[in-house]
Image (cartoon, rainbow, N blue to C red; front, top):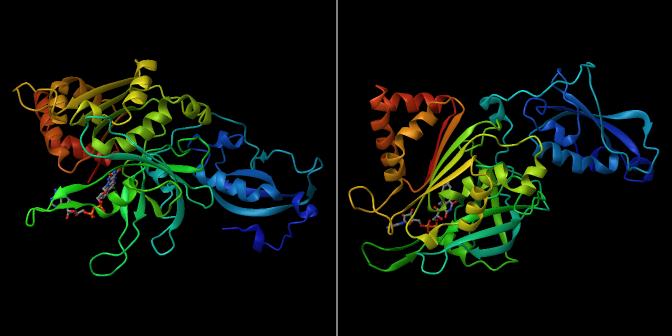
Length: 406
Ligand SMILES: Cc1cc2nc3c(=O)[nH]c(=O)nc-3n(C[C@H](O)[C@H](O)[C@H](O)COP(=O)(O)OP(=O)(O)OC[C@H]3O[C@@H](n4cnc5c(N)ncnc54)[C@H](O)[C@@H]3O)c2cc1C
């Protein structure tokens, strides 16, 4: 990509006042163009005039919005009169008139998703900014909300993607540890809505070795959960296209989470409902229906409880939460209440919602949680003489069925 430092343009005051024209593709269809204050033209590609001293910033901003710069050329004979303070201006190649944006097709959206900006051989070194416990007193285990600084590099991501973490140290064979993936828990703008951070929600893995009966602690989750703020961490990615949120603000979003499976859904829900996010994304005013079905062992294990419930109270018509609290609630048969029991309980409503083409269903969390959910939905679908397996396959093909379990 273009780099002003190797462009032959010297960074002196004359150079600073020069203007460059960026030709950008990929923003006209996905509703992000207005974040650049660029009118949307029928021709698709857009032309943005950028002063020299804002080139890097604008490149990052365009990339973050999912656009691709296809060419950069100097605007010959043109400089900024007013000391470089002029805002970017846009021109249309064709002179087309403005028109409302259309919804991007899922496949087109996927093409614009950032992937592996940082790879394991050259990871991004991000400082841990905070590390807070999410499990309240009386809860089971340790789950931490960690925020990392991304302000120095080119890393950016979308809601639903994951970040790789390479823990310090070596494995038992003396090789550097491999990366572990963690779902991103923040929106693309980060928790401070300044595009400078990424947050993760990490459960410390602790189990008893079945042979030795010794307590074993997971390498990377322990490394992260015990991390002191200020520590620099090797981060890779982002990766993942399975759990992306549709751009359509009228979509219905069913979210089924167990434990840290809440991470991507926190990002979605913050994007949909958090006030600062709504201000940062004037083009995305969520008007659909979001339903979170959240499985946890005990009430103190409800991660992000206060914030989720505050959003629900503020948007009762657009957001519903259903908990399955296994060790506190009983299912119909008197056993523990797991997520599949809640799905079975609400199967008719869920099935009706799922049949709406605007509905996307997401499952995230513990491996194996799909089976019970599948069984509950299959039973309901069969009442309408529908083969659930087939129906689910069709949903998957249409990008309406999304699963990420680990
Ligand atoms: C796409 C994706 C997203 C993810 N998102 C998150 C997330 O948001 N939050 C999160 O906390 N984790 C997430 N994970 C899981 C995460 O990547 C790690 O696998 C997890 O943190 C454990 O890594 P570790 O290094 O601590 O454990 P390791 O030291 O790698 O130990 C894991 C190994 O321990 C063994 N083991 C584990 N449990 C048992 C058991 N009960 N009995 C016997 N052996 C056992 C298994 O061999 C397992 O492979 C995600 C995984 C994927 C693939």
